[in-house]
Image (cartoon, rainbow over all chains, first blue to last red; front, side, top):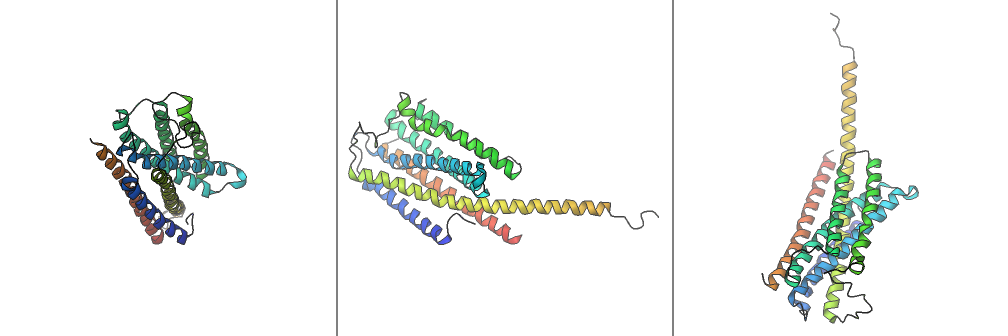
Length: 251
Length: 39
């Protein structure tokens, strides 16, 4: 069981690989260095797409969780999608923080600052790390799915806080640049292309990995069900053997 | 560290993280598929 048809998944995999290679070529050589930041700005072609995919992954987790909680759409599929997407979201949030830190050292002069955007992003990382830990707590499938769905929806509250933290508080992290109408950001054509292409390449990578992670979730669930059934059968057989009258027991 | 070293570190870490995650995922899928076949 996969999310996409196998042919679509294969095409998606090759498309993802090709787009990541093109992104590396443009990000490292094709795009010119920034006027102010120089070459360090090339880290933005990873940082921005990674942050976007982290938002997307947590949005998918929340949507899938809501669909699981709503009785009319309840299906184990949504629980699996939520778990798979959250794991990817945690990975991309970690990458966002690491790349941001590598960019911050030469530009801000520090690896880390107790800045609203950075702190709320770190909180987001730990919230969903907790969500993943909650998924590993043994319980009945429905009970686990319900408590994880509720936890995912609560954790998602932090996503708009992360996004708007730069406008709500005075931060070291810059405000939104590309969509700020007052700023009228003039980005060089190749730099803008590389940034948007990075967003596309990372979105494809997310879709491909989500499909694979979903497949693993399905296989693991099947194995766990089979192991449980076998354990119950063995227990029943053991009890039956114990209760059976023993030949020659009275002699 | 020079600017170029920060850039290379960022790209290498991202590439390796994605590659390692994907390899581990494929290995887990293959192992689970094998167990599924054995059962």
